[in-house]
Length: 80
Image (cartoon, rainbow, N blue to C red; front, side):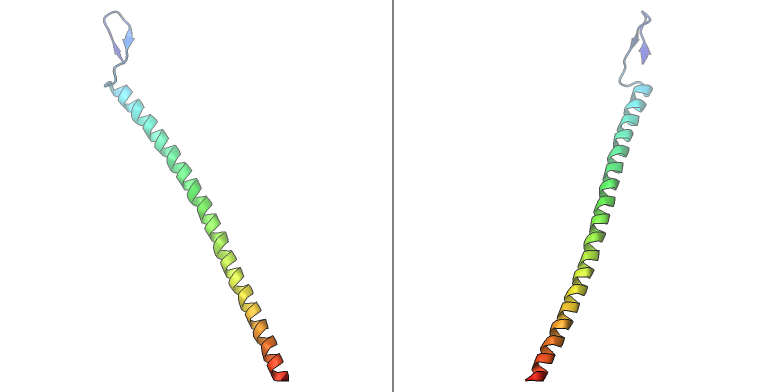
């Protein structure tokens, strides 16, 4: 801000305080955006972890069903 001859304060966009204030606002906005991105990444990490755990649970269930099916088929073939 610069003073004019009449004592009124006028806005000068090239004043160091105005420039630093603008930079501070931009940094605050960037910080908020980074925080939002980090929250989304954490959310995606949790979701991905849940999906990976479900995949292993499903693979285990398929393995058990396959083993039981093989056992039942081998018992029926043994009876013939």
